[in-house]
Length: 73
Image (cartoon, helix red, strand yellow):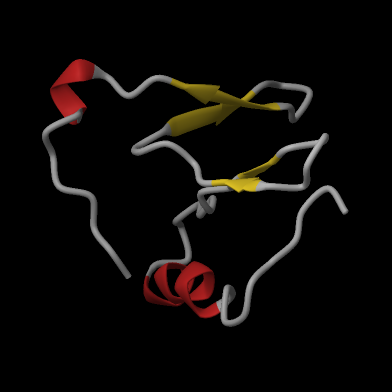
């Protein structure tokens, strides 16, 4: 599968939307090594953007944002 989910993955994604319907939520996605199927956790903080043709691209975190605490659901 391109994406596999773990137990109880959905509530942390839905809760911010319930609290504010204008939010866009995107989970941190771990990588799965194609040669060994080893799960490699996503590295630290990330940000991303969608292009006009709806392709998602990971981008580096701005230096000034790197020290802001990341909220944990």
